[in-house]
Length: 84
Image (cartoon, rainbow, N blue to C red):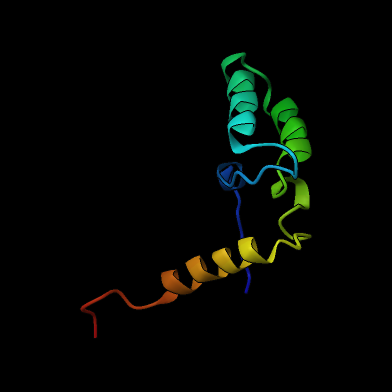
């Protein structure tokens, strides 16, 4: 399977690092955005607090998460209901 997340799409994939809750991650990123942090600074922080950022997705050993992505990819390749 090949999965390409580009053009900011990876920023929508919120997978907090171990020990950080999703609400904490959302609060941190939200505060940076509201403060007008430059994208470079935002990405620097995201690499530290999101498992999937900065190449973390490619190195992930979280099998449940990877299986979820495979499931999504498989469904997106399936023919729509009612199509021949």
